[in-house]
Image (cartoon, helix red, strand yellow):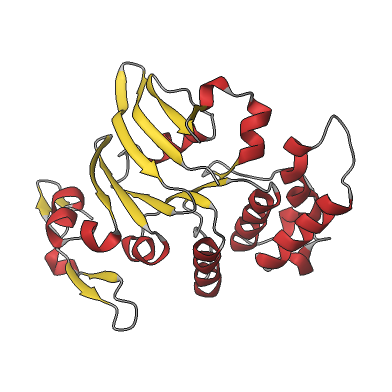
Amino acid sequence: MPGLRFDDLSVTVDHHTIVRELRLDVPDGAVVGLVGPNGSGKSTVLRCVYRALAPSGGAVLLDSSDLATMSLRDSARRIAALTQENSVDLDFTVAEVVALGRTPHLAGNQPLGPRDRALCDEAMARLDVLHLAERSVLSLSGGERQRVLIARALAQEPEVLVLDEPTNHLDLRHQVELLSLLRGAGRTALVVVHDLNLAAIACDRLGVLSGGALVASGPPAHVLTPELVRAVFGVAMTVVHHPETGVPQLLHSLSTMEESPDGPRS
């Protein structure tokens, strides 16, 4: 299963550099999280992977091949994305939305075959939306829609998953189930996560972005230090380790927030 490599990736828009010379590996089968403050370039990096944005410099490599040299259909067969801009405004059923994940694998108006339908059913079952298959997606809650869109990405049968804030709108149960799915799927995954504690649980490695630059990378236990969190996020944190898993978890109180001229920031 291929991995991703960012080879001096840079993105400049309207003379403003959003990402600068990013070098980061997403190893085969690993879950790698991107964390950082708002505006640090995390979603921009993902857009270069699912090709909504072309790099200004450097490259994104998939299995040592530059994505820019692949056809859009070929890369869509291999990479599935859940984006922040994902929305479903048409009155499709849940089953119809999930079936869209098979589009890169079908020619023209070719109908779904038995294997396609089985993959869609399996994806809906894994995300706990199979019982909603005939419901209009417009009638669903935000969390239910989010799970439908993740099911669509799984039905695409990708080698690489690219997920931007996948736990948005999900209740605690479905957050835990999604994180377990990511850890157990064996797929290469690049995930933007704002919650550092969720990132520590879900990810094998983390890349920390600040001002468009990579400032740290490695296993969560090595990256999530009080010093780094204070420097990047401006918050004083205490790091404890889960008594069973040893995963680092960060604790803070409002009284420990760094003060700025405009007041506290988080």
